[in-house]
Amino acid sequence: MLGLWWANTAAVAGLDGWLTGAGRITGLLAGYAIAVLLLLMARIPALEHGVGSDRLTRWHSMGGRYVVGLSVAHTLLITWGYAVTEDTDVVGETVTLNLSYPDVLRATVAVLLLVGIGVASARAIRPRLRYETWFHLHFYTYLAAWLAFGHVLATGNEFIANPSARLAWYALYITVALVLIWYRVLTPVRQAFRHRFTVTQVVEEGPGVVSVHITGRRLDLLRAEPGQFFRWRFLTRELWWSPNPYSLSAVPGRNELRITAKGLGDHSRILARLRPGTRVLAEGPYGSLTAGRRRRRRVLLIAGGAGITPLRSLFESIPAAPGDLTLLYRARATGDLVFRHELDGISARRGARLHYCVGPTSVVGDPFASRTLAALVPHLRDHDVYLCAPSAMTAHVIASLRAVGVPPGRIHHESFEF
Ligand SMILES: Cc1cc2nc3c(=O)[nH]c(=O)nc-3n(C[C@H](O)[C@H](O)[C@H](O)COP(=O)(O)OP(=O)(O)OC[C@H]3O[C@@H](n4cnc5c(N)ncnc54)[C@H](O)[C@@H]3O)c2cc1C
Image 1 (cartoon, rainbow, N blue to C red):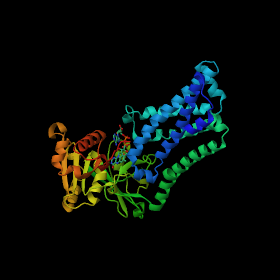
Image 2: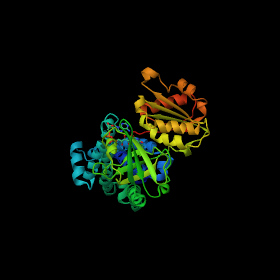
Image 3: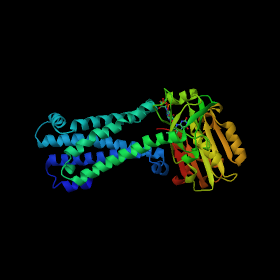
């Protein structure tokens, strides 16, 4: 992008030259970054498995801030630069640009949409939104990319007289669109026809927590691994329009998958009312919290609350000799522990250590202080650690592990926050 600008700019002179130059660069970078952001969220299996969905989401949200910042800067700088060139005021130039330049009004709408999505994703607002609202709001990014696309080619000096640059720009956006359609639309539909996912039963695991058992044909072809998740679209009147992510809570079988959800909001609560026979679209498997990441013989799994789901399936399946596998499961109260019977059984069968850390920190102390952890898990430094918990607990546990010398490359974590 910078090369395009460089090749097209003979000299930068005067205030207007600097403003317009900066406006062009920020615009080119914003246009390129939108394409990259969309690609990060295209559910490309190599990225989902290699990088991990939650890291991709973090990159996407960080990149999103840059895109919003660059787009706003581009709009302001170009308008100001043109106003200086034409010796007019910024408001008048804004009206002229939007009404007389091709496709600029559409691009302005695109910037407003991006700012709206950015505001809704801000840390202060995001926790107040429902998953579904947040998810659907992001569809406006596609609209924004489409609205902004034309003005780049119609008004960008770098493209007007440069057929190769136009071709590259088309190629970039068409590739991104095809990848999105392939992985986010066609793949789930193809999987639904191929595997015919259907709910077989819903089992209450504890207060507000249910397991949904899903059957299907030749599920082994999915190559799902313990620790991974799918985005599930249950085809009922209330749930068909939102594909919420839930991890596999049992080792995936040839004909059955199981997920377990804590009822936090509309989607997760309605799962308890699903009827056997309900058809399901499943997107996945995603996630890199899998046995393949492990480097050492000893493995420590640390679960907080609903984070037990992916770790429950790893606890059952990750290869480990007796004594080499430990699970720490943190819950606020004994009643909040799920799979207790199953976990006790797995622990006995595999010779694995299992510690329930139950109760408020003010009463039971901090089980994840580095000293406590080191005392609880012999040879702690020599473990691969898998962690799935709420963000505050995750940050605290990672700091403690780092303090006792577990290198970051051996701490594998996934967040349920979106
Ligand atoms: C990769 C991944 C795997 C997941 N696996 C599981 C799983 O196995 N079991 C499970 O129970 N959940 C899991 N989740 C979380 C689950 O997807 C969401 O809790 C659920 O989709 C929220 O939808 P809802 O309509 O029930 O709640 P909403 O109506 O969207 O939310 C209600 C309220 O709860 C808050 N909230 C909802 N979910 C969360 C969350 N995860 N963290 C913090 N605040 C939240 C919202 O901000 C909102 O204030 C996973 C999430 C991800 C990203």
